[in-house]
Length: 98
Image (cartoon, rainbow, N blue to C red):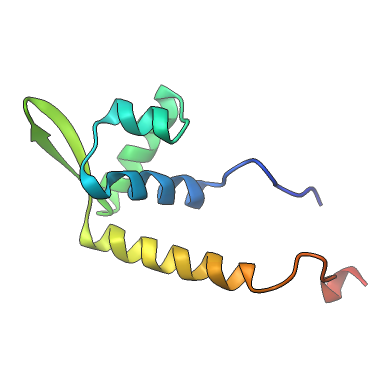
């Protein structure tokens, strides 16, 4: 089984986009700050909008994205999950590998 050290998974990318969007942000700024391609940002914005985790508004004639209350709830759960995982030392060997 290979270890993922530098690659983010779908949930991590969603959390990154939601975190960036808590203040209201344009698509291009999300794309650059989250280090996503144009195709990726379109995919994740559509996913998050469809799930009600993100909302789209308009400011000064440009679309702006903001994290919804449900999105902030997602971020809270995500943060707790990451904190739980980090509580265990990495050098522990799983029982199944023995």
